[in-house]
Image 1 (cartoon, rainbow, N blue to C red):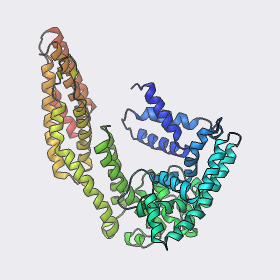
Image 2 (image 1 turned 90 degrees about the horizontal axis):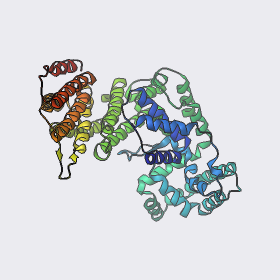
Image 3 (image 1 turned 120 degrees about the horizontal axis):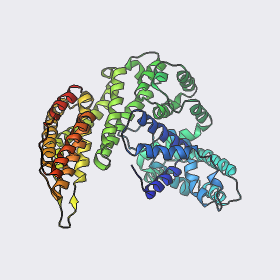
Length: 491
């Protein structure tokens, strides 16, 4: 797939705005998706750009002439210790240690104007001076974080005895939730001296075996939790970001607590490790619904559903949540929300596929108007229909899933064969329109029935096109029906 120079430039600009930790995390996730044979056409392009940027020697962007660039980077540098704790979604149940990225701009503006304006202004002035070294700026930003911990702590203590001041802070930061996010930021900054070295000793990617059987991460976390018990939720939030299999943190919590019983874990200091897994289920649910409603990429919704299904399946395999009312309730709520959205998707499947398979028309200017939106919708829906077969329990769509699959199979098989047959009768512009519809049908059939069936359809298509161009000739019987039965028997 080719990419325009404009798209490549925009991507590189965006990646350059991220911290090295964020780019490294992106590379890890993309490599994981590639290993799982993700077919997203953008994956290799983004991965190559991110890896290239990551391998570039760090030349010290803070020392650019004039210092204007590094003035703009001070906020990012100030919040850089938070990289392991930032999320983009607003969770229904706020989880300590998981900080919404959107709050950072509000916190920075509040600090710069109301809390430590002189300190911030001094650092910005130094950053704008090209004679000041990058190392000096790093030290100033570090000192600014330390100063902010004391200043924020003092401001919050005053707000506890002044309702008016607390309301004012809430207005600036987004209510009580914003204040809670601020407390998490302060907590991480206050612990930076020991927390950052601790996280450096934790692998960037923690696999399932390490969480369930190995002792290295277990001993590190156990020792740190005993010394800093108030920071267990923060440690759990960092680990869920680094875990290749986040659901394995449930078993990890049992190992720390010395008992797999959910009730024992819930009453132990290590309950936050299960709490954070529930928050990840909630985050993935929000992400999936957001992709469904707002992301034009037709594969994003099913990918998010796949991550959600893997998490829930892992949790239910490792822990009997029926023994824990709080965690069971949270996970069940995400299931209900996901099930409702998937059911709506499945109910729309038959009509969406029929719209996508309609033969397009030419407009008055002779341009063929292919309904790409209908095709993209069908791609999204078909991937969900396919997933519903193996994830029906997680998605809670047993009955509607079965009915939908039957309707989809019949529609795809019958309409696709009809479109290919009609290719042999078409001429001129009608052949072009018929080809567009047949190609869309073959592409959708490949998603549902598999590549072997699609390859046979393409051979039949080629034969039909040859017949149309040669003006006639008998065709051999189509073997697609047999291949359909074979493809479905393997599911």
